[in-house]
Length: 278
Image (cartoon, rainbow, N blue to C red):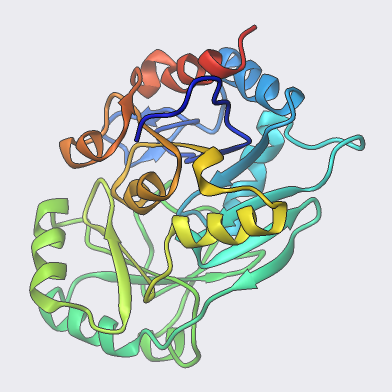
């Protein structure tokens, strides 16, 4: 989508891992630190009056630390809007106040996946603590505590998001599996590794951002979205301008209006500086 002359984003939607935070090569995790040039660019957007909204697959407690690192909130500003769990949870911060949440019965989809990938690990969020998991995830992949729980108990009630992870599989195998199974009644997105997020049908970062935009009285056409993953595709389609990080896979690069530098080149700062110069 081409932006009109004089366009400037009123809402800036930012993915976290691989966009704000740099990936640790080969470790499936990111550095929990923000480069000063990125932090400064985000702060300029705020100071110019734009609404900066973090939008991630992370759970809420995994996102507030990043908001703190970026220093997005202070006494003189309105509380932040944050889109968590790939759109299933929308909350204000600080403190955490959930204002919108979507839940679903994940048991049929999880049963179908485990029949195909019996060694996969299942996790659901335990808000404010960490995750309940069928067994431990690889170190560094989940924030907070991991509470080992039987799968039947994990899914005994409706949930907002389920993570399926198989350290012995590949992302490509998970893409094929999800396509074969169909996973009726759910939305799904495959990550960089053999990592699958399940959510209620129709829920994505875009649906969460639309909830925020309506509350703020902002049109999607006035939004800038920056990300690097498959879970950013709906957000790219929704926003007036979509920008992929340079290290994104081809599917994501092709979906974006523009490609900036990679996360290792501080591409987010490059993009924001076009609209909010130093």
